[in-house]
Length: 272
Image 1 (spheres, rainbow, N blue to C red):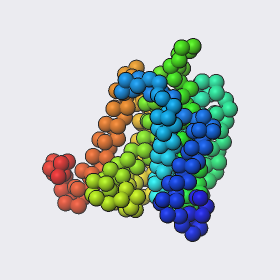
Image 2: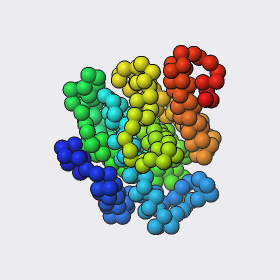
Image 3: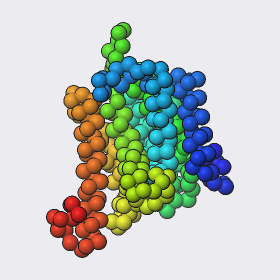
Image 4: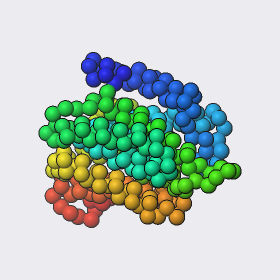
């Protein structure tokens, strides 16, 4: 589907239908799914159908998130290297070497691609690359969280797995949820293309593609460090902290854009 979209285009309905089919194959036939929420919102074990639906939605969210951040040179590639590199390290720590090998294979392949994708890019991944990267990364995320689930026979090796997974993927996920929310609030389709993604907004401040990629990659790494540093706070508090950090960063960009437009660093630019 990604290849066809790059060559001739695919409408959003067809794209989401095929993503749902692929997600269903992974979740139902492959049994790659979340079976519980680690006590988040008071939920531990989930009924089978709820588990299936939530897992498919998570896969589709991550797949589309990587597709949407592929808007400037090097950003999707760098984000994928950070995400899969981190998952690889965590899987090695957990002695899950087969999964670590998959993540490292992704890191190596994307690193070779990134050499020619940095600005000025000579090649582009398109939907063919971004959708595949999103799919594999979503599977690694689900496997990582599920393997650290509390059970009657063993305690998890990493207690903050859900929050840490969100920190690893916060860049593409936060941006996707943010633009979808703003589009819906404006009364337009959430799938309408615009230039309101966080990377577009940073470019408006005058940064180059490489500088924007470095800024967003740095924010991603900082989120991971926050999750690891404050892991004792618990998943719900830690998720709130990571989201608050992302909101604060987005607020800073908004402030800088308003200040640039008005040619003034007035305090009111924080709010209106």
